[in-house]
Structure formats: structure tokens, C-alpha cells
Amino acid sequence: MNRIGIVVALIAFLVGLSVATFAELRVFLPAILRGAVVTVHVATLSIALFLLLSVVAGIGRAYGAAPVRWLSVLYIEVFRGTSLLVILFWMFFVMPEFGLFLSPVAAGVLGIGLNFGAYGAEVVRGALAAVPRGQTEATIALNMSAFRRMTRIVLPQAVAIMIPGLVNLTIELVKATALVSAVTLSDITYAAVQQNQLHFRTVEIFSITLMLYYCLAQFVRFGGAALEDRFSRHRARRA
Amino acid sequence: MDWRWDFTFEVVLPRIWQAAGVTVWATVVSFLLALVGGLVLMLLKTHRSAWISRPATEFIEVIRATPLLVQIFFLFFLLPEVGITLPPLTTGILALAIYNSTLCAEVYRAGFQAVPSGQWEACVALNMSTYRTYKDVIIPQSLPPIVPALGNYLVAIFKETPLLSFVAVAEIMQVSKLIGSEYYRFTEAITVAGIFFLVMSLVAAFLIRLVDQYVKRSILH
Image 1 (cartoon, rainbow over the protein chains, first blue to last red):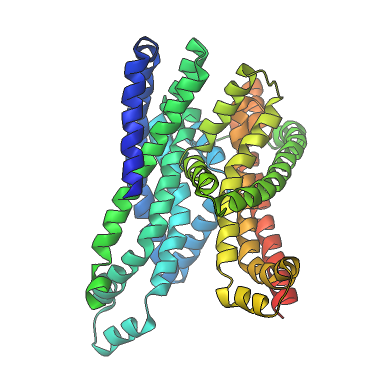
Image 2 (cartoon, one colour):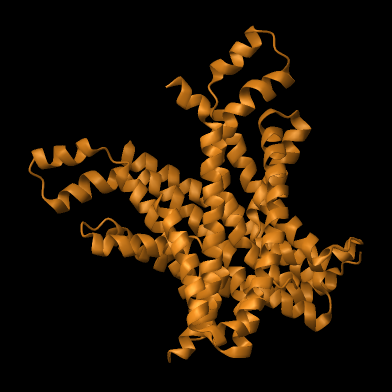
């Protein structure tokens, strides 16, 4: 695959760059890599929350009883309508007013997860609607319970449809973790700005930062492609 | 919890109202720039020479796969180093425009590809000029899928403007942070900012639906 080649080339370029300008890089690279650990930590936790919320709110909006549906719609509209940065600030600075003190990581994960879960819920809802109606009708004809219909017939087919949309959102999420520096977390972006103010090597520092994010996004994309292959096997077999 | 209404009305609302002008200005200008830039990028990407289309494609990929915030910082710190000193607002608008023009380029491309190739062939068969082919056949048919997608990006840009607060542009988020640190009361300022974004997004989404319906009715009958 072409993209794998690009990522390998980029990593090789990073290593090469660090050898070429060893003395320069040794100064600021460790700080940026420590930031990368924070970014990956926050990203992993918020991806988990995002996927959970997407599925719950998506199913709630598509199949829930009226109160559940209204609640899902309210959640989706509120979090799709507000800016992520405002939500993060609100979590971190306003929540304590209501007596809920969140750690920076918790505020970041909660803000990002809630915001992207609202977008993901729409993807899940669309995927559930895209499963052919005949499938549902057949399960009714076979007298399956609603729970088995969902877990055995509708969801497995919907998962294959929703994966590309969710992978795109996951890449957006990884990029959005750059905002957590607003709630005092020292992620890649924060480290880059700080190192830039210390050493004034703008081009090197920010090129490395951009490449780190690019590599992270490509990893998500490969994972997504592998998952998509795994979950659309039933289509390939039928064809 | 103590919410002070007098503080909300006397301090927070007037100052956020002023900042709203900056936010809307940044949104509109960068959206217009992104519309033009997206068209240019789309034309470069679909150019027949690989020497032009390949770099354009890679440029779009890299910009799309990296966070907007890092790009804003990059431009903000890089431009002065190469001798260009712009006010933070201009730098921010530039970064927003570049980021979103790569997204708009994909929208245009998808819109043009959605026109069946038979339409092009029919135009050739009818001996239509290139100008008439685009004006009367291709563009009218590619607009309906493009318009709602571009409208979504307008709302997306609007929600991205708070990022400009990182480079000290006095837009809504920055002003509510300032109010918060001046009076040490974050609750009112940040909540008002959040409600402002929610209301504006819902209004914008409603307007986009109107425009979308108008385009569909007037072009596709």
C-alpha cells in the first residue's frame, strides 16, 4: 500500500533528521515525545468513550422509546452545536462551580468523548438505517426476540457500514486532542509551543510535530482498514 | 453554584457581543478564502500532469491529517521568522482558510465526479463549447450535492474560530477567558459563550437547509 510507504519514509526521515542534526534535536525532541505519550493516553481513553457514546446514543435515537429518543436527540444536538474548545473550558472551569472537580485528563477525555460521540451517533444511526429492511422483516418472520435481532442480525451488518465513518471521526478525534493543552495538559502541541519559545527553532519543531500527528492519523487509518476488511467478510464471501 | 445575573448582563453580554463581531468576521472571510482556495486545489489535484497533481494531492493529505491548532501555531511563529509580520487575526484567518480549502477541494471533486460521464459525452456530441458545457450542464448538476456540504463547512469553520484564542485574537473564547481571569468568575462568561455557539450553529444549520431547498428547487425543478 502506498500510504504505508509514506509513513515508513516519514519515520525514516525523522530518524535521519535526528542523526543529521543530533545536537539540535536532542534538546527539544525528548519533551515533544513526552508530549506524544500524553496525547496517545488522552486519545486512547477518549476513543473508548467516543465509541461507547456513539453506539448508545445512535441506537437510542434509532430504536429507543420516546424519552430515550428525546434524550439522545438533545445530547446529539447540544454537543454537535457547540465548539469543542468551549466544552473543554466549560468542563474544566465551570464544572467545579457545580461541585464536580475534574482532573485535566478527565476533563479532556470527557469533553472530547462527549463531543465526538454526538457526531458518531449520527454515523451509527445512518448505518442502522442502511441495513436492508428485509433483514428486520425476516427476523420478525422467524420470531426472533428484539435483543437477538439487534445483536445477531442488524448490528453485525451495520458495523460493516459504520466503520469508514467512525474511522474518519477517530482521525478527527486524534487531531482534536491538540486542544487539551487548553486544560493544562502538556501534550505534543503544548510541548512544541513551549520548546519553540525556549529554542526558537520553529521550522524543525513544528515539522516534527506535524509529522507526529500525521503518523498517528495514518496508524488509525491502517487499523480502520484492517477492521473494515474483517467486518465486511460476509459481503466478500457472498459475492 | 452562584450565578449572578447582574454580572451576566452588565459585563459579560456587552463584551461578548463585541467579540462576536470578530468571530463572525473571521468565519466569513476564511470561508470565502476557502471556497476560492478549494477550487484552485481541486483544479491542481485533477490536473493531467502528475508533476502538478501529485504534490497537490499530498499537500491536501498532510493538511487534512494534522491538527488545525498546530497549523495555526506554525504559521503564527513561522511568518515573523521569514520576515512577514501580520496581525494575529490575519494569521488565524489564513490558517483557517488553508485548512478548510483542502476540505472544500474534496467537496468540489466529489460534486463534479457525481455528474455522469454521459453528460460530458452528450455535450461533445452536441458540439457545445467548453464554457456552455460547464455553465449549462455540468455546474447546475454538480451544485445540489456541493451546497449542503459547503454549508456544513461554514458551520464547522464557525466552531473552529475559538482556536484563534490560542494566538490571542480577541474573539469570543478569548474574551470570555479574559473576563474570567479579570473578575475570577468563569461560570457566566464561558456558559454564555457556549450558548452563543449553540444558538448560532442551530440558526446557521436552519439557514443552510433553506438555501439547500432553494438550490434543489430552482435547478432541478
